[in-house]
Length: 305
Image (cartoon, rainbow, N blue to C red; front, side):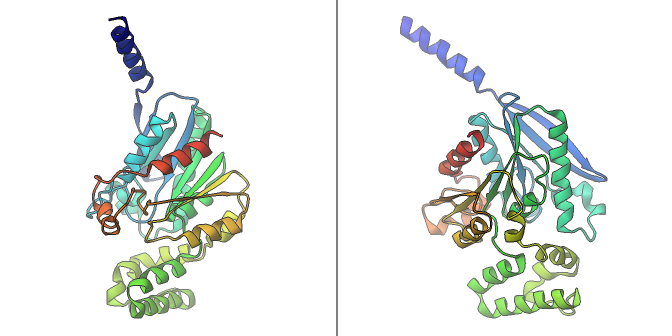
């Protein structure tokens, strides 16, 4: 009986320790509203701030109005919270319908100022022991440009070259003719600053509203930007990623050899554990696939050392 009572007391004590606090916080960048969720076990612990990849991604890793419902950011949040790391993610400016009137002609630097506003908010509060930016995909580059007042930086599935080269490679992999067409469209943007006739098969990328953003994005080289960083860097790349490759991660490490590189077996672009190749794309549309446990272990080790 004594052993049973001890077990119950220990279980209750553990439950109290592991209780997660949650706060809804909206941060403003002028008219832009960035509503987000802060979760943590206790203050004075490391705070990870998520920097989104491309698209209208919300704080949980889903894209409103699309089939993308991977919930990968929410899964990442729960996993790092269980390791006693605080976490904040917000609805990207393009995921919040309230921001629609202010999005005309936005550029990649606008996403950078959004991140800086978020960092400044938590820096001013001084509630957490350090601030770490986790830049995922497109966010890897955006985070590189927003590292003022940040203690550590994690690049997660970040490209190692300019976006025009990345997109052309991705398209060419599936259709070489369309890849050549994409290169022509990018060349037009570089030379003329516009595209006179958008290829109908590439309209979702090169539509007129997207062109100012693409021009601002393709001017930035991740290798040049990461070379400027002087805080600790962790570069993470999944071996099942079909959008960004291990070569990209290697290029980033070559540009800043002070960084660390971790490759994660069976992890894809949305951080899921993938054992069957046919499940790779399916995992973008479902939260039934678990997040990579090795990813969380690598992040935990880097953040806390």
